[in-house]
Every structure is written in C-alpha cells, then in structure tokens.
Length: 103
Image (cartoon, rainbow, N blue to C red; front, side):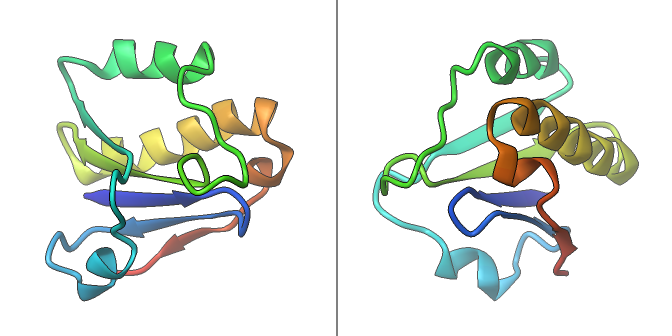
C-alpha cells in the first residue's frame, strides 16, 4: 500500500493498488519515500514523534510517500490514522486533513 501525504494542500491519499497510475503523477526528483515494515515500525514511529521528518511549503518538504508493508491492510490503514494523529500535533493542517481512499 502506498500513501501520499501532502502538507500545503493538506490531505492523505491511500493507494491500495500499487499499480495505480495516480501514484506516478506525484513522483518528483528526490521524492521522500519511507518504507514501513513490521521490523522497522517502532523506529519509524519514533522518527515521526521526534519530528525527524519535517513538513513545510518548500518543495523538498511539502509532501511524502509512505510504502506500508505491515501484516494486513487493516494494520496499514490503522498506521495511516496513527501517523496523521502524530503529525497533527505539530502540523495543524494535517490534524483534520481528509484521508482519501483512491484505489
């Protein structure tokens, strides 16, 4: 599952189909991509809690892709909402941003 997080136009888009053509439309040079597995989940969560990943209006920090590879799609989706809650503590626009299920 791939998830797109956009900060200035605050929204999170969940792509359950990894072949979705919309995924490629958002790719850019030096695109931030975080791969999340069961093995690195705690480390990734701590990175977000500790604001290792910053968001701003600059091109290098205005969005991010997550590639979620947890045990089930329910775990992946749950993580999206958990990350939104964490990010919302630091970035108000993301706190109530819509979560869109695209495909």
